[in-house]
Amino acid sequence: MATYDFDLFVIGAGSGGVRASRWAARYGAKVAVADDDRLGGTCVNRGCIPKKLYAYASHFHEDFEDAVGFGWDKAAPKFDWSRLVAAKEKEITRLNGIYAKLLDGSGVTRIDGRATVEGPHAVKVGGKSYTARYILVATGGRPHTPEIPGVELGIVSDQAFDLPALPKRIVILGGGYIALEFAGIFTGLGVNTTLVYRQHLPLRGFDEDVRKHLAVEIAKKGIKIRAGANLSKIERKGAALLAHTDAGDTIEVDQVMFATGRSPNTKGLGLEKAGVKLGKNGEVVVDEYSRSNVESIYAIGDVTDRIALTPVALHEGMCVAETLFNGTPTKSDHSDVAAAVFSQPTVSVVGLTEEEARKKFAKVDIYRTSFKPLKHTLTGRDERTMMKMVVDAATGRVLGCHMVGADAAEIIQGIAIAVKMGATKADFDRTIGIHPTAAEEFVTLRDKVPDLVPKAAE
Ligand code: NDP
Image (cartoon, rainbow, N blue to C red):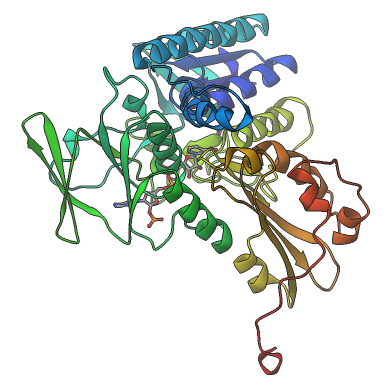
């Protein structure tokens, strides 16, 4: 039997790669993980974690205003961008250290450098060659930008966290997760923000009611929306930038940000040398066990272009470790994955949208509510929360729950367990609510939205 330097060589020490490494080592495998950047990957260094910290930072603006309704004097504290950047940096450095400790504590060999695949069992890092029984590609993704003149004058989310100064005016292109999250962050921090997206509503693929509700709510926060538009050119004008739209007008700003999707990170990895099949976006094509067409090479996380979410990468990484080193072949389960967009207000969802459910099921019942949160009865803020439930009329099974509003992600995480377990509307109905909360609305939805499909057409 061939002997290798390692049982598993992981390329990429992001969320998925680190989890797979630790899990494999826990099952007794000899593991190495290579990365040429700080440990933790996108999520820790330039994604989920700094983004959520900045979202908290930006929300204080409203909290100070809202406090007046509860008897506090009007406060107008000043915001210092450089202090936020420094505080974020300190926390990220702490997390990098925790990742190093976790890997060291698990007996995983850390290799600092850019790895390339040299063959089905061979990897090279900084001129040194290693052999491995299995290779796991966990190299994530990178921002994708459109090919328009002047694109190099703009930034992507990687740079947004560490801008030398907060711009006064920004235009953000895109209507997805990153565009909406940063539009909320910049607006909350006082930046005059214009959001340009090419669809009629943001968040293509989300439930239509969610998309409509969010568009109304973010506009109330002061985000200027240019729907159904794209940027065609960026030009410098002194210290400012001119963002030209395809509608023929120009927006003068200090910064342009592209949040136009992310591409799998496979360029220059050498996967072709090993005969690994890549898809049309450059993603590693894998089966349900995250195995590529080459038996010894697996891939997890964003590089596979399945569901680009940290907890999904963690799950896929654990499944690979189970399959390869614990004798229990385990498929990744990508059904009913809950997700949140930390826009302001937050969107969080689990399961099917109404549109998806109507395609799959003969008849669906829709329950929906929209209300002013209790807190805003005193603040006077014009903000409404929306909740929606999609139910299979034949079985009563809850197919999807959707929410736009404060704490949506915290609420949907619990709801996701019920949906995953196959809970029915009747199960929700016999659950007694916690009063007064927004969450209780999910167990008190009584009135179906009238079905507009004409009887004759059914
Ligand atoms: P998304 O895929 O969410 O959104 C991309 C947006 O860019 C869409 O609105 C898309 O428009 C638009 N777009 C793409 N190409 C062009 C173009 N050439 N010109 C104009 N607009 C364009 O990508 P993000 O970059 O926001 O995020 C990447 C992924 O990362 C997300 O899908 C998500 O999986 C993950 N993520 C998760 C987060 C979370 O869990 N909270 C936070 C951030 C990212 P259209 O719809 O018309 O194609």
